[in-house]
Image (cartoon, rainbow, N blue to C red; front, side, top):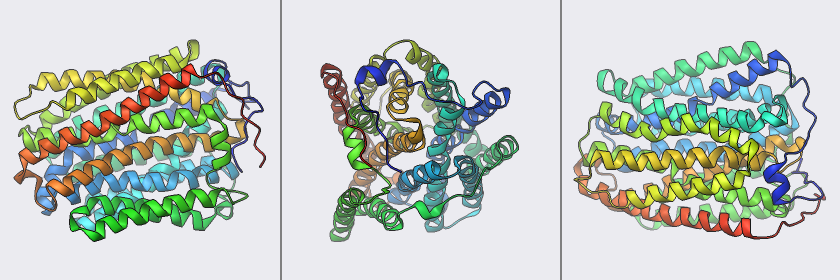
Length: 488
């Protein structure tokens, strides 16, 4: 069903005083324990992404893969997640989000194991796409389950703790992966991730029984196919733009399919994305746009700095990991605290301060060179960690409090969708620059070109974050708007 909107949605209402929804069994000890287990399970996807970023140079050397193939390993994971988030939200709102959550966790574990066993880069690419789809299923449903079982007065704290687990994954990913790559193999990163995910699946399965079947009939399958085709066209188009007409044609196809998807959703009674309701809910719309722009820098920076340190600077993997983990450590420590602040103060103030700190990170990254001090990079990552810690939880609080209780799964999916769209866009920009400047050559053969790619991509990301900051300021300056109730 589409996003039902309250009859009056104002910035202040969604920003400060959450709705008082009915929360069944919210005080039970079982639900408190389940909430903690769901929060901990959010650790896995960022652990796998950040860990794989460290493993890429070694993977490329062993499998004789160039820069484009390595960027696809990360980009296809994000693309799979992006293409599956809205279908996951629709299924969760119509059926049993608990069953979906467990299915996604199991699928993520199995694909991680299979990737570690493969030696064919095309097969790894396919599995990474499937892995991204699996991650989307439980990333989209996790916050919605938390919304169901956590009292409204503690919701900001719960989201903050969830983001803390995510940032803990980002923190430990580079450190653990650096150790595994240097002492075992890049495959160890996937085996370790598979074991961690399977342990989480077993724990969640014992604590959260399924309630009913997944109603796949509610999906509009042509819309699902169009989304997947659009995302894959854009991914491969940007990755192979150096091939000339084929790359540009794929980009064009992806853009056209995206427009067709948006137009089609406005004609459906039960769309994957209720465009009309989304546009009417200014609080939700603005929070999602700002989040998308900010998250363009999130994973692209991890990928680019890993390649920069290992390829352009010759820093070993076990030393690169701890450097890249600095920002994530700060995020993991401060995100729960930021969530508590979001329960007491205006979340938009905290989110705006975070955007400004992220902007500083991008400006510093544009000056990286072949003799930049590692301490400079550490300071830069401190700004990034502080920025995302201040931004993420308050912005998530705004998003989840801007819709009715019947649409929390879809709001959760939209929030994950905007993050994933931002991260995918950032990686597409990185892939495009790598395709143009390095192509299918080994990245180890082009250390200077890699520095140029890093500087250029961060320049583009700075422009995006600057726009996000401007939108944040303008949105706070506008008077609160009244959104009509959904007509659907």
